[in-house]
Image 1 (cartoon, rainbow over the protein chains, first blue to last red):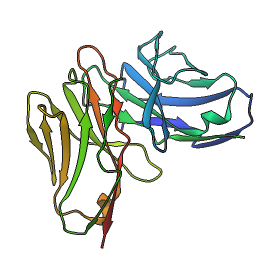
Image 2 (image 1 turned 45 degrees about the horizontal axis):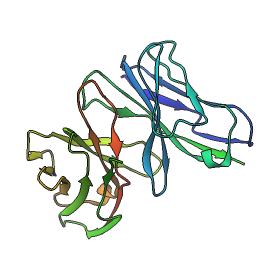
Image 3 (image 1 turned 120 degrees about the vertical axis):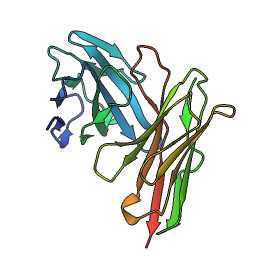
Image 4 (image 1 turned 45 degrees about the vertical axis):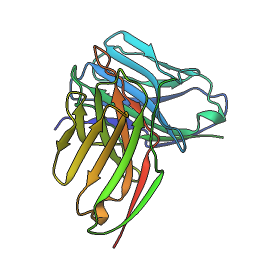
Length: 112
Length: 113
């Protein structure tokens, strides 16, 4: 069965370190998204991609970057982790029509 | 800026009762709406969707109502069960070739046995 997987599930890192969160989908979806979830803010869009080599900034993109070298993967990199980036991160993918949005199980990141 | 919001942050109901979760949206250009359910420790799961050319859509035990006049969306869950306990989010999309979703802040539904 097709799926979308995130790794790691939990990560603790130190302030200033570079961190990469992985997202891999086998749906063959063109569109992939990264959201962060914080209490009181719901899900906020960080970056998104509509295809290979396409990347776009979302509403909270500062301090984050993504790259899309193939259809299956959209890794999220925190260039220099900050305590404000402690959050739960969700990856999602969708086909080129609405209604097919699928989320991963999330990565809980703690920056100490 | 444009936003999607919820009227009630928490809702507690008795098992077997019907639940109604509300959502207000402010982007008049939005033409597609989705309700998601998120259980503890998991990612959001699709429940039901509705397009702006509809007022009502029914699924299994769930109904979504859309009132475009007052920009209001609601999710009705019939005969609520303990397994329905979760956070519920509404999300909107403004259409075209844009596949991004804007999410509300969520409502925690607690079902008491």
